[in-house]
Image 1 (cartoon, rainbow, N blue to C red):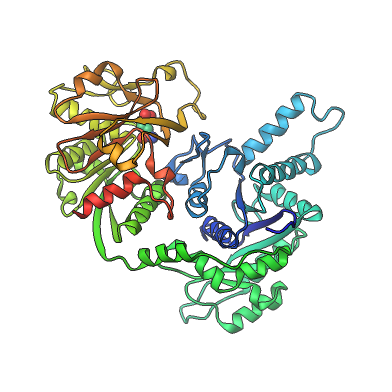
Image 2 (image 1 turned 90 degrees about the horizontal axis):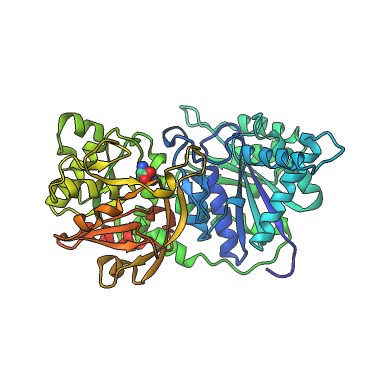
Length: 530
Ligand code: GLN
């Protein structure tokens, strides 16, 4: 960027949730990046939780973990996957976090003499926070995604803070809206017009309207939105159904969004360059081969609870030129009926992260099947712990072996609480969280996969391989090939007598990017192709 000062783009959702605001925000960031600008996202969420760590993924979608250990909304995964950035807890503002901050400041006497109010005290803190993120990341553009929908009680004060920000800073407001079609195919713009008025009543004038729509917005409808919402026609941008979410930046660029934004922000930037991105998107759209991967899980009915895994498979698929079809396998059924027929035709099996006992015996059955039938296996966190349990029981003859999370009275606690977890009773942000280094064993498969000795991946767990059982478990093909430097925490296990059987105590899905697939996923998919 050439000398101009920092700008802010605020993305507001209107009419309803579920329009893919995170994907829109990420795509805007990508086209700005493609123009050589440093774009960094912030997400505001109105709930009073401080972070997402205590939320049920079944209700709220996946809990995404940042390198600094912040447990946040799954949109952060989308940002990192699109923008190739490593975000911090600072990028996530929740209602709980900002109120906590203000109340703690009040207790310390930070507002001595004043009655602390939503305006100006809370809104000032928000503005300060938003500017602070711009500073930390030395951003050219800060993208601010406002969670929820305009009109919600929860985000009103935040939107007010953004209005105030626009008095001092260069701010462009973007309205994301939905244009429904009747059975006759007729597109209806009236809801968007009303939503626009609602935003106007808050003193905000969106300069760009992004329309979530099935197909293409008709010329008359574009005219209507333009006229009633007070924006030029070219600033009414389509957000249609597409083959892959990663195509959206290309579509936005093609429809002139980057040019319009740069004009509005009065920023000069390079010519567009999304060539590499485009190449990968083409591979996602036109894969040469296809595999099926079975993923077991408790929340299989809500795909959002495993979104980072399915995206990591898209990335790994693109780099292997193949389409990865996911088959979600509900293991409580395998457990009840003992029927493994759902695994038929799976080229590989993943057991992802999880908590609690339900469905675990079914998962263990799937792992045994993968091990014995030499089907590629990838275990993620809980998926490694259960692979160790399966190995202990069926190979090492440790009858009744289990994790103490599942069976506190097991005769062979091969998986047990981390020592530092013993005294913890609070639930918020108390797991072993975030990025940690891993020492990879020379000559192991993990070494071949990652190509280096020290790697960094993200964790979210309370339990680990019980150090007392390590020597009993090793041998006959099992190798713990990744360890915490200087500590006895086992972080990768692999079987040497199997085409691909690898499991990690960390979550490799959290570091996978479209342009940089995670090596474990990439090699797993490669193994499934064989
Ligand atoms: N429940 C296990 C633990 O706490 C696994 C956690 C996970 O899979 N994220 O260690």
